[in-house]
Amino acid sequence: MLHTLRSVEDFYRQHSWLRQMRETCPVWLDERSGCWHVFRYNDVYRVITDYASFSSEKPKTSSAAGSSILSMDPPRHKQYRNLVAYAFTPRALARLSERIAVLTQELLDKIRFKGQMDLVADFAYQLPTIVIAEMLGVPASDRSLFKRWTDVLLNHQVDDAELFRPDLALETDDIEHTYEELKEYLEEALKERQSNPKEDMMSDLLAVEMEGKRLSMEERVNFCRILLLAGHLTTTNLLSSGIWCFDGQPGLIEQLRKRPELMPGAIEEVLRYAAPGWRITRMARTDVKLAEVTIPAGAAIFAWLASANWDSTQFSDPDSFDVARSPNKHLTFGHGIHFCIGAPLARMEATIALSMLLEQLPQLCLIDRAALEPFEGTTLFGFKRMPVTFVPQT
Ligand code: HEM
Image (spheres, rainbow, N blue to C red):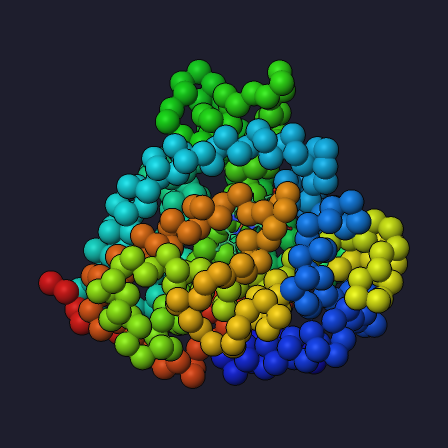
């Protein structure tokens, strides 16, 4: 049965259901919702990469939200992605890495002397907004404004099922209003850079040009907005699940502290084992056969990334968390033309932040693993709160 996650036990129950589905019913029609579910690695891979058969287009849930790169198909997707890819060049990321260390230090300085904290509220939720704001070029003085907008938008977690039933999607005035405020703010900031370019992504978005084409103002605003929505909670969950996974292996935190070169591999394993997103969506363009089952044209499909990541045909002993796992071809960032554009940033941010956290907070450990509460939906996996203790620093 598809589980509503209320406890850590439910994470393991969900995974045992996914394993059962991979073994007995790899392509499943949920009669209640009319949506199809795909569980095996090879089938998930096909659904997310074969854009000729599976479209990324979805009905819009908010008039103010605008369309995003995530729901575009070729050829429009390619043109748009080529334009925005300039904002994620190694040069742009190198510019950010030092800032991420400084921003992480600012957060650590507020908590190091306390001896305990909620790792989600005090650290993992905060860092990604500040980093995205910084990357775009939002000045520190506007951070609280930016954080308020992010809080409203992220609290409005639309479950994927609603994307295919727009009549179910709740559209509150607050969300419409927040989108409007954010749009006005970004338009203003972009216009200012037209006359006064800076070393930031908003200036890059104004300058990029390919084959004589530039982004329209609406496209630029939409891109800034999607960075916030696609890059925030996912990274928050990666950071907190990282500590959850490390804490679950006796001696691992100490080992990572002594051998920081193990951290990138450890983060890949967190991405596989506790993927921040359970599944992504597609729409069948035509009738399409998958694992001997025909999915009808127009059907909504959930491709379970988290299930693919635990598929024993691809990963030996998939239920074990193994920092030395190699190769580790998890599908957590998707694959193909929509492969996560922010993956290098998320990896870099997690490596810097988790290394600094372990280094500066000795004997970091979870207060009560069994009492942790995950988010309830079936789209994102992460924890609402994560109380931890450590030796306070003066
Ligand atoms: C796309 C996951 C962090 C921006 C995607 C996709 C996945 C994903 C699965 C593909 C969706 C699809 O095929 O439908 C994640 C995870 C992250 C993360 C697990 C953190 C651990 C970020 C960050 C940013 C970002 C930090 C930017 C600041 C995007 C964008 C796309 C995307 C713009 C759309 C790319 C396209 O459609 O061509 N992400 N993401 N993501 N992600 Fe991420």
